[in-house]
Image: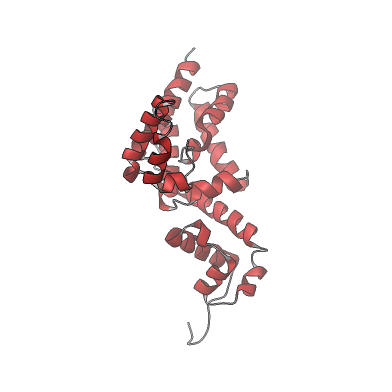
Length: 228
């Protein structure tokens, strides 16, 4: 590139730069100004490519989902397709590897994840694998409800990541101690969750072992229904 000549600004460059900002500093750091500063342009220059911050955030969801679809396309073909659960599990855990690269993504997808082309493509392939494995349309429908966000590689949280209580374990424990006598089993559960908080992967308590445990529990239950 010639000295002093800037690379042309495009929507893809804007979104990839916003992705870098989110990965480095979290989704709250993604603003039009922050992205523009990273690109070395004025914030107004971005508006020729994204209408506003809402469109920028929607574009980030599309970017992560596109990355998931690309990763799934690269999965090697299975010579002898095994139990459908293995095939579906592999696709979901592939999605999870992408989610783990963008730990801010679950929050954004949960809020802004409309069924755009990328998500439709992902879920269409997921449904196809279940149907090919002998699941009825009705069972696949129920499976999508049961899997929820796990289908995209992350699980919903009982406690919201980023809340004041979740971010400060000492304060949270002090607050919960006041209810220990009235709600002993909830306190025991919450204490266990806080004890392994350092192992968290995506959310406050969403570590890999727990994610796979929940996923396998759902898939095994669906197979039991399929086999009826």
